[in-house]
Length: 154
Image (cartoon, rainbow, N blue to C red; front, side, top):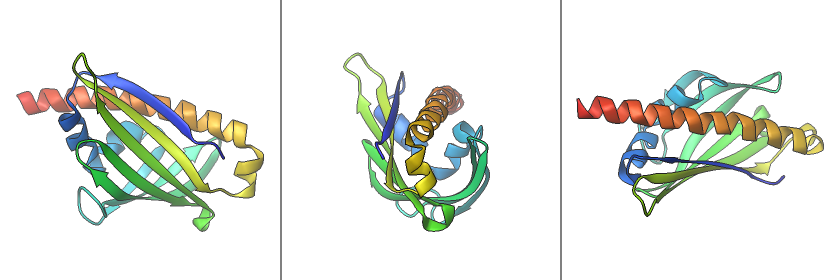
């Protein structure tokens, strides 16, 4: 299946964005519209940081294990997602790039490594659903980054 990429530009520096995204518990704040029941394990940040969540998309619910498998400060974080009893494996990659005008360009790419037959048969619908959910994630991430920066300044 083709990957899905969404992006947003924010006024925070790449270091601020990376610092926020590096903490697994922060992800609940901007993804809880479709990922609920967050349970954390491993370190709080960095490679090995892990969460198990319940994903509710397209009328379906499934448990997903999200584990950080690569982290390159302040440029990139790669998560491995496993769901559907191991039949669905994907990588979620945050790319963090400085903007010439200041601020940061954040992109998130969801790449399927393995997908159940139903996902493959309904690939256009699955990709559209993921793109829509992750666009919302990016907007909510921008809001949470602003809140986080304001709290750090006070």
